Length: 178
Image (spheres, helix red, strand yellow):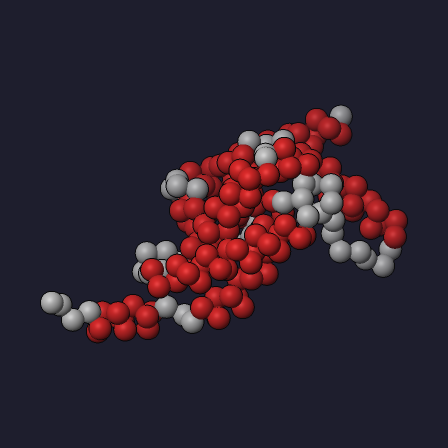
């Protein structure tokens, strides 16, 4: 029988405490999930599920294979997809109306920002799912390498997908303004 205690302690030593991961990533995971779903209540539920799943799987997490961010965002992406499977995909397309930016002092400026924000999210909702995911993951602070890992493609493919999404978004916005 092989003694794995030295190996196990080395792996655990490479891993940050789970509480540190929670503190560091909770807001980013919530923001990512919130951008995907209709209500803040759903986002809170899914985020809680993400960290419960992560906590239960933490013993199998190996930092040498992936970054903590990529690992957590993969769990978040899967939990969000599970939510849509359970509640239907139409909700994902309707989600943009309720998500609004934080209010500023100038009411006219805030109103204009909200109109533009809603319009932009409506354009994003019309993009193919992989392009929407690339934009959401990248704007959640992940590197292209991490986005590629989460989307099962190379870093270069993730960059291309992201830039094609931005190009399609730019064209849609320009067509809408014409």
